[in-house]
Length: 360
Image (cartoon, rainbow, N blue to C red):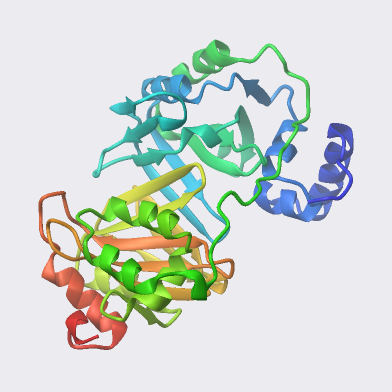
């Protein structure tokens, strides 16, 4: 980010200069080049083709069902997850800080929302190589993109403008005030943690969703926990593990689950993958309903983890960046109440170079 805040006019001027040099530059790359957030870049262009909407994300998400099939996009710095389907069956539990918002649809758009981070939203009409692209784009308080919804050729395009008109904000001033996130939880150093007790609690888990609260309780990072728990529960593997999991799942016609998220959302794909392609440092799934774009240059560590549940051990491959943040997580397809498929353990064993995971 720049030390001195740019005005909307300055951003527009610099963007036009950049586009003259790079006519096909993507919004995220343009924002990075200008030293601003993607939200600031978008907000600076509020006008005919960009409309600021009311910050009513839940109501907007409910209305998206009227658009029919759309493409849901969630990303972090090193991975982009794109899934086509219909926004339906939005579930809302609780209120305020305790509010949980879910869209559970394993065969379609499957999302977990952390809605307190959703602070601004825009309707965007972009010029694309194949014609205009209409979208809804949501950002956090730092101006970082949380989630984007694009119309497809099969969308109910006639419903888009009424949705935009319904949620149009009265304030259409260009520009966006951002707020930088500060570290909330101060982590303990390794020698401050009772690792024996940590191990006992890990062994006693009954659900994978108990894992994050356990980390917060002990004030340790995910990677700290992996490095101290022991190889029977967390085993580091090579940085090519993500590619190998995708290759093996594709070659065996095995249904996997792919989790990609940021502070505001987790987006999940469940199913088979087929079309795998490499472009530069990016390894890609390019299937009709699901695309994944993974920048392997951003991978710093990969870990096979195993967490106890009432249904037995659940195994995953977790992929991390240089800041220790999760890039993507892979599971074998499984529903609650089912044991993990042996075929998934065989894939992870092959990734680890072991006969079985139990040989750790």
